[in-house]
Length: 330
Image 1: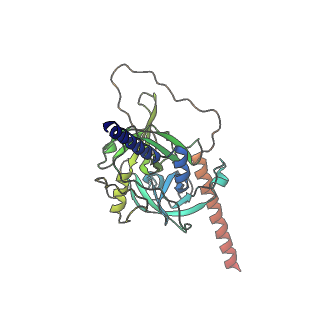
Image 2: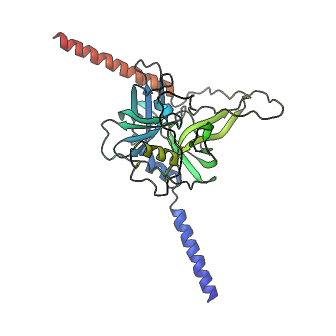
Image 3: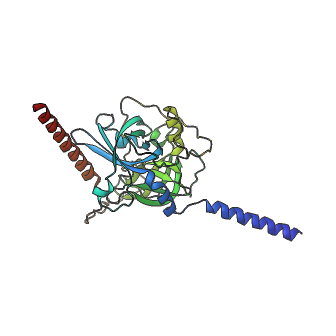
């Protein structure tokens, strides 16, 4: 009898393990499920001389997009870029920006926090029933948990998938109260800013925001990137009075954070997926090692894309102004 009971318990353990394991998706399944709700975000000034680019996540089917503040707020003015464009994912990414970025929508900033480096955009005239990324409010993410990121790393491909694990947790990142982050060695680069960090179920657990790449002595740093915890972003969204982020939001209790309110003037510059200052280690000074410079052409250049978009829109504005002038002349 005891033997039979033991075997039954063992069978239940295996069944539970199989069920738990079955809930974790493969990176390919996560990508197929979530990538349609990931967008590319571009902002530039009217003159087209300055701009920024990054990634965002559609978190509500009516076109609410979550991204980094530094992607959409002009550093020089501390205000949103006059022109914001959001690009929806094509059915198939080919590597040709002309076709990959053909589904463009205008957007405007509805709320942002530069201390937390988060912002919300609304899409103008979005298609019906947009796909959404489920924004998890769970605080159950642990060091060692598998995560993936989707974004547009410069010198890589658009809608790129990278994989890794949570490697550390940091509260009050860079001295900002309530800005709790996950450290990950998932591959992130400029262009990933504002994109989702996703757990094994395809839920967003972080908003990718900063990287560490070069130490003060010039030695390269690898595998150190930071994502704002999704619980921090969800708490801030509620404080804006915008309600639940999406129908797919995890039902776990929200984390208690001290998200900072929006401020009229920008604080010291936020990290833009650029190197994070690292403390100098005691000991002998190591020789400076410069990161290798790539000699081969890369799939895409973020600055060139922004410049091309700004020029195209300036040409369109000039053409429209000329047409209106001719119509008035008649």
